[in-house]
Structures are given as C-alpha cells and as structure tokens.
Amino acid sequence: MRPKEKNGISGWYSILTSRLNWLSFNGSRIDSRRMGGGSAEAYEILRNHHIKITRTIEAFHTLACPVDCSGVCCHFPPGEISVQIEAALAAPIREHLIRCNLKPEDYIQKVLWSLMPVNVVSALPKELFVFRENADEMVWQVKATGAKMPHKSGDSIPRTCDGHELWVDSKSRACAFLDSRSLCMLQEANLKPAACRDFVCVAYAVHSVTKQLGYLSEDDLKGLGFAERNRLASNLMDAFVSDELMRLETEYHDSIVRLTDAYLLDENMDSTLRDFKAQEEKYILRRRRLFRRVIDPGPLDYLAQLLSWRR
Image (cartoon, rainbow, N blue to C red; front, side, top):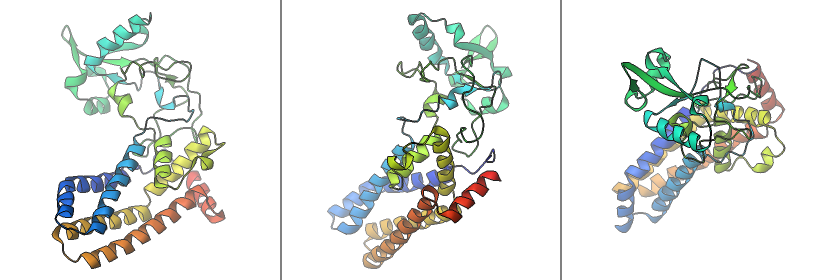
C-alpha cells in the first residue's frame, strides 16, 4: 500500500503558470516587437509556446471526467468532514430542492461557526460563509447521508494536488446530493458550492495533462479499471514532481526568459536561438524518456515502481 502522503503536483504546476504569466505579461511587447521587425522565428516560438502552455493548464482543470469512480471525492467521514456552502448560495439550493419536491433538511444543515474545525475556519472567507441567526454565527454545510464508500483504501483512493490521499475512509458516506448514478444533483442547476467547483480530481487531471503533452493515449488506458487508472495517475504524479523533471522545467523556463529578453532587446538573437533550440531538444528528449518509463516501464522501471508503492 502506498504512503498516505507524497509530494504533490503543485510545484510543477507553479512553474508552468509562472511561464504562462511571463509570456502573457510580455505579450503586447512581443507582438509590437514583431511589427517592428523582430525575429520571425523567435516570435513563432514564443507565441506557439504560449498556446501550448494554455492548453496544458486547461487540460489540468478539465471537468469532463469519463472515469467511473462512483464519486469518491463526494464521500465524507460522518461528523468529521463536509462541504460548507456559501451563505448566498443556501437559499437558491433550498428553493431548488423544494421545486424538486425534496426536503432541504435532508440535504443541508446549519452548524455553529464556533464548532467548525480550526483548519476549516482558517480556510474559509468568513464574510462569504457565515450568517447570523439570533446571536449565533452559523454556516451551512451539506449532509453525508448517502450510500457507504464503494471503494476500499489503497489503489482506489486518489490523491489531492498536494499529494495527500483523499479524506475518505471505510466509514465514509456519500454526499446527500450524489444521486444513484454517482452524479451531483446540483451540477445541472449550476448550484455547486465553491469547494466542489474548485476541486481538481488528480486521478483524471494527471491523465488529461499527460495526454495533452502527447505521452498518453486512450489506447494506453483501454480496459483499465479505476484502481489501475488511479495507480497509473499516482505514478505519473511522481514523474511530474521528480527532481529530474523539476530541473528540466526550471532550465527550460530560464531559456524561455532568455529568449524573450533577447527578442525584445534584439540582442544576440542568433546565439540565443541556437542555445534555446539545444536546450529545448534536451528538454523534450529527457521529458519523453521520463514519462515513457512510467507509462511503458521496462523490468527495472516496474520493479522501482513496485518498491515505491510498498514503502
């Protein structure tokens, strides 16, 4: 069984967003320099890279998850963890339930703010979630009164972006809004709480990003159950946060910055372009090799993966 906590994908994602922010910040200057006679080759490299990064980040945040996991992230240990609802969203949710001939009290409940766990209180913007009832500060949250957790711990429990396993355990029950198809009743009504809207399923997001990078295809996933897909996602996440990839991404990021500066200042373009192409070739080759070791491992790679899961 793998460790409860591993490194998350946040570091890799941070490098990518920094690169996108850098190119976006200089976007108008890059366009203006091209109109003023700047290097056409450098311009195409920078613009194409901006498009690629944007698509990769969009893939990370995709919501079109085809994996049947029975809504693992929508299960909570009773009385321990739940989803809090923004105060302004509670009334529309109640009205929606009533229109559907359902009782709101079966789905959401009021809880004293003072009784909320410290980590929850520190994470929630009080002005958006807390409302007053008489002299008490209250917050709305969903009930976990549905079916029991369908998966056992281990391979079937995804990890969060920071590398922790999800909060679920064998006693967890489904969110009251999770229907018999494992779909959220609030999704089509556009009434999902912020915590649900912002949640990223790493098990699918990592697959999606790896496919966007060109290292994974549907053929690689064909016939795999959720536990096998999740195991692959966990191994892919380890590749994303490996020292090797972090070093490659940092070096490549620096080469993009140097190319941008040289292009904007029109200085040392020939040598900078030559250095960038050499750095990009090394980056692509080593990154591809790193991901192929995870997706299509040889005997030694497979043994290393197996040992890492048993640690």
